Length: 190
Image 1: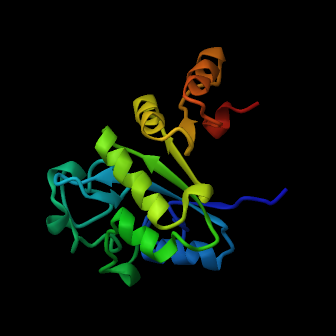
Image 2 (image 1 turned 180 degrees about the horizontal axis):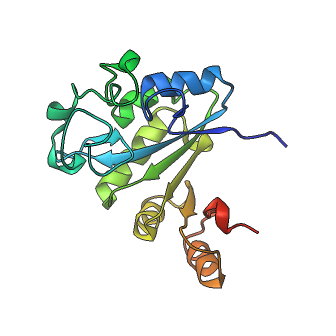
């Protein structure tokens, strides 16, 4: 069995998370997979950013969803981490796939905000366009996002991220949408 080394938001201990610098560093350090977070802008562009607000990890203030992509494309998302990363930019989901989608990597795309059917369709269309389906798992803390994903596509792998213990209700939930992965908090594992 191959060992999976999934870089959480890229090599986020070495470079600003969810940036090209972080993803390239992860590959350099030997990761064979990347986990990243999907949010959407006010105009529906899917971008890579973990937090729902920009304040801590960019030079912008407020919610990601309050900005258009045109207003965010020049945001500095590197200076908060280190002066050496000043000017590091946000990425759209499609930009990420352009750089990494056809590489020999595994992907975990976490749906952070609430995604509707048309947005999930676009995510899956892009995954297919960049030949990444067999290497992809879509995850979320929000069961509704997973249900929508399953309604859109019967075959894409999905995983449920939990802040609670795995119990029979969780197992029934994930089985009801043909999910194959449950991701509990590490400290809840015995």
